[in-house]
Amino acid sequence: MYEEKQQSYFESVRLELLELIPKKNRRGNMLEIGAGSGSTLMYAKQNGYAKNIYGIELNEIKDSHQNSKEFESFIIGNIENMALPFDQNQFDVILCGDVLEHLVDPYSVLRKLKKYLKKDGTFIASIPNIRYFSILKQLILHGDFKYTERGILDRTHLRFFCKKNMIELFEGNGYSVCRIISNISLIGNKSKKFNKITFGKFEEFLTPQYYLVVNKNE
Image (cartoon, rainbow, N blue to C red; front, side):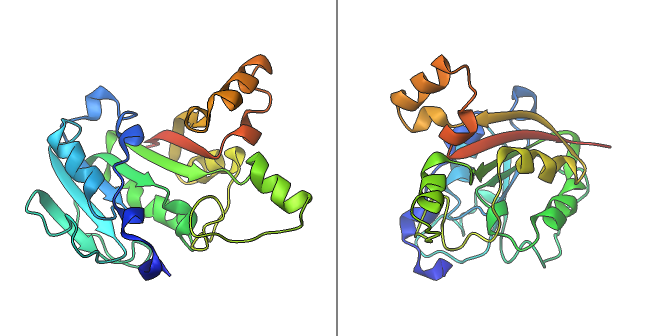
């Protein structure tokens, strides 16, 4: 199914995730899981978010950065069943943008990655929110769980999470969630205003995606 995705699906630069990296973790080693074409890592290196960049991607993507000499390592393979050739405590930052919901067992993958994150390193993730109002409307009013090419009901998604479950996903596997941020700001001013005047009580219904800033527990 991934081979049927348009090239643009793999090429976006996840600047909103890079901006969440604490200053103390910048200019070090960065690993991205689901690195796509490598665009985010290349941007990170060229703009002071990382010094050394490493990528893992399930698919080989033509006409991309995957073979660039800028990478210390770029591996094509399945993170769920591959052995990782890294040292323990090697990475200042691990990026995992919209990946965990695609995995058969994201819980095991988080435990697997933990040993490669430095003691003071940061794990940055983004995860779609199944509690988003348009999905609930589709389910409750129309009785329709229809998969799509992109978005929350992307047909390659195997796992679904609400905000509470995202926190449990990390905290149950050896991490501490430092921040969890709604991306309401990306979907329009009406939702932002409604969230503000209702004192955030409906935030989880207005949020299509959450960003998580996470540290590991020793």
